[in-house]
Image (cartoon, rainbow over all chains, first blue to last red; front, top):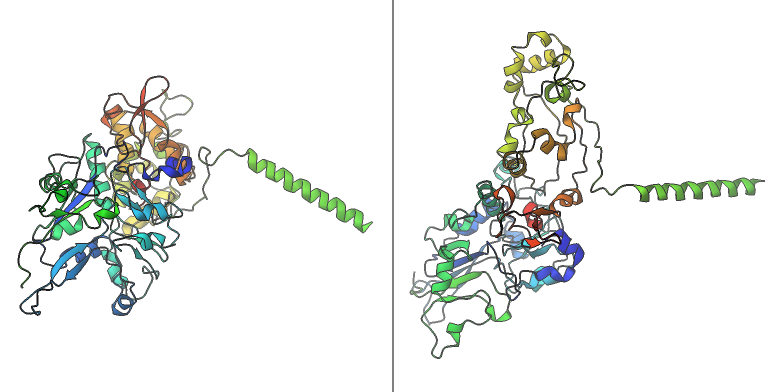
Length: 284
Length: 234
């Protein structure tokens, strides 16, 4: 999304829609999460808080639904008749899926959330007016609203703790929507570094904070367009197509042994995150 | 009588309002015009013209340091401009590093003040002149790398594009509006791409713009600079 598009043609919001004739070149940032490897340790969530200056709102505000975790670990309990000590939860890290045809983008009255040429669903904080329509329209419920002016709210960041805030990302004020950005500050820093060398980013040069800390390596992040990248190879091995609203492998009779799937694919948001189904026992 | 005076005052007011309105319309757009910022009082009135100015503006061949400047490269003091996002204010050591050997100005009031800070082991509390809002991520490095090191333009021309003709100023003053429309007025221009496939002048990639390089009416491949919202706002 650029200023010229915004001014010239409001309908070009979805310029890089996957069914358009404009391919992602040279970047399309995507992720693959192996739920079999995920142990639900919450390290990714904590890393996200630290990297992205997310306020820790406390118990009261959490109960009011005002929690700000850009990356949350969802727990599911398989219904197989067993009780807790014998049976553990299965976990699913859930964050912004960076949809290609994002439902949030089309409803923003001011164009504050829009698509970038490298396939990110960007959130422009200073453009946001806080209508919260995007959050209402998000099928994944991964958008979080600043109900308070957290930079100045007492006890969110006590005086000394402001020193540990990440200077590379904006401190969001009251009345602004925010969400996972695929650590866009790291992507932009990486792009600048390689632009000086006149090349494009190689696989592994940019890591998201959640990927960096994941102790089991469940999260893979990279450039889907680059055939050498791990994320491209995983998507290919699982036969998951970015531009499909129903995967070919799922149309086969009797299903498939491949584990890759995308959440709420049938709604056609074309998410950029592929999950790999858990196969091991859920017992602790 | 009173009514007549009141009417004439009203007429004058209307005329003044309409004339000021037409003056507003006649102003050049903010995106291209200079926009002089407020004069900022610095702890030491730093003479940019003495440091970066031409040796002798009237006759460059006749270099008399007492008349003109020293032609010091901007990046000798603002050394982080080519390395990071902020250009940086030089540490006091850098000032002293030269000035302890320049006896001729050692007793002038400004240098005396400089050495007072040095002896008190305190940094000079310079005030920020070019201050962007916190939600903007401007990067000096990319601009310097591209225009100075890859296109070999003169440093003062490149820095001056945004900072004005600093070599003629004493204390620097903001010369451009630094508003987003003003930034975008460059980033929306079509720049010539020399090599097909997206590796333009100075081996810079324009892929990051929203639109891919395209042929213009003259048959030359052009592309816009990075102008995605999330290039600067995140």
